Image 1 (cartoon, rainbow, N blue to C red):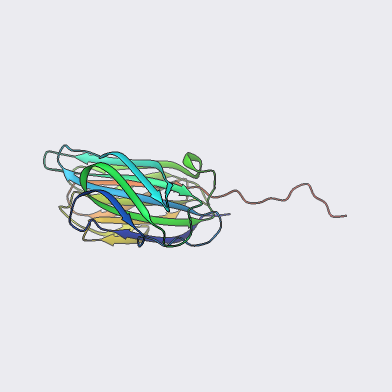
Image 2: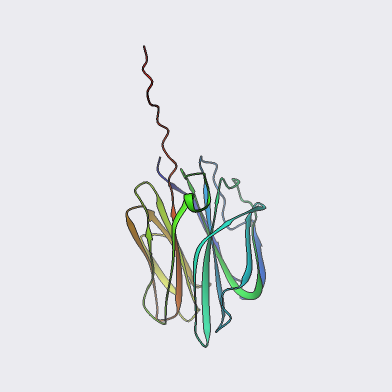
Length: 222
């Protein structure tokens, strides 16, 4: 069985900082088998303040598990991203909620899949990777994966420039919240990129692991 794309969505920060987020319109998870959901929280903040603490993320009231992330700041501005995962998420347009300590401008991205290993944690979301860059170049992250899996990545920056495209398959580019997301079929090593201008950026990539195929062995029909 191979992992298959199901749905994706995102939401900007609305131009104001806060310590929480809640919405039932970010993504509608399908009803396929062996489902999984990956959510990215992306923060922009003043220089030196760093990633907020006490982060909690839930889907339909069920806690999601942190996978990977990245953070970068200089004397003027900074940005962070952190990925969360959940196996067997409830289908439908349910509420995605998050809270944290320390007011931040926040954006959210979500992507769901079918055909995923249902163990959870590092088994279902293996080889998470984060990366960051200082004032220039395209955003990128390299994720170890395998045939049958899918890797998904999201990107944000400190707001001084916008993203214009991603490679491979683009899920979205949001010029308002300076964020982007993409995904691609698994291979031994997948490099995911997002084109942007010369500013501080962060990226997080997740390897979503395929469920084992059902194999019928040792049975001989007589």
